[in-house]
Structure formats: structure tokens, C-alpha cells
Length: 85
Image (tube, one colour):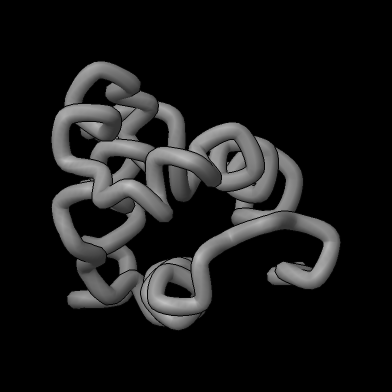
């Protein structure tokens, strides 16, 4: 899990993804949109480096993040609440 070396993910996003997956820590708005599967919102919030890597980010989330931690706003909120209790 969390094998980032096979994906071109900007370094400034890696820790946020891992902390979210392991501990349910809220990410920034761009990663939150990616995790929620809100493509238009993610594109609107992306910096140039993140936008260039969006394909690899989506693949990473799909292939490496825990099942149930992504795919919709409801799933993301539920994932974070799991760690808050």
C-alpha cells in the first residue's frame, strides 16, 4: 500500500495522501476533490504540477488507497470519521 514510486505524483502531495489513507487526516482541497472523484473541481483547484500529474494521481488513488477511502464525498467523509471516533 502507498507505493508512490511507480507514479509521477508531485512530492508536495505524497505526504497528504499517505496521512489521509493511514490516519484519515483531511487533505487540501485539490486532493480532497481527487479522492471524492470530483474531476472538474480537482482540475479547477490544481496547481500546474498537480494538473500535469492528475492521471497518475487518479491511478494511485484507485490502485493504492484503501477500499472505501475514496470515490465519493460520502465515502471520504466516512473514512475521516472512522479515525475521529
